[in-house]
Image (cartoon, rainbow, N blue to C red):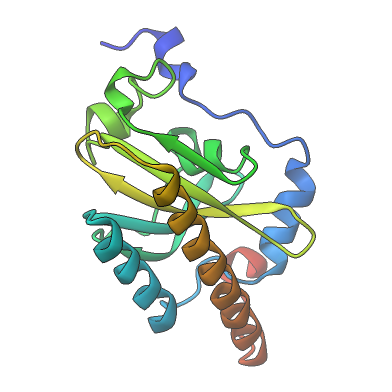
Length: 185
């Protein structure tokens, strides 16, 4: 059994501009949109480049992280309280956890101990044009691994590519008049 202190240790604090950040996320109209083949090509390419089984383009909402694109998973979202990307959006550019099972903040996270069995995580922050973090392009492996400075540069590059495609997709969704489920509620 996990002690309460351990259970809450992995929760990410809220971003300093959380309400503005979430408003900006909702303004994109991307939450709960249909899959984008172009974004899916990016996540598949990232999986191949880094030789990882799981790549997610996550958008961090108030209470969940929703996957705008994914490779290697059928999940569409997880609760924010277990989200690694909720931690990543607090970083300037990237969060790398080479061995989650040995890291004091993440070792008790249910995504490490149960479910996905995350052993390694790297997430590059995706920001809007005003600089607010909306989510992350992340790679996940069930085993710990080394991540070099060159690897970080590559993932940041792909996150910028995904960001541009993400905003193109946002404009397309708005032109088609497809508001997201979160904006219609």
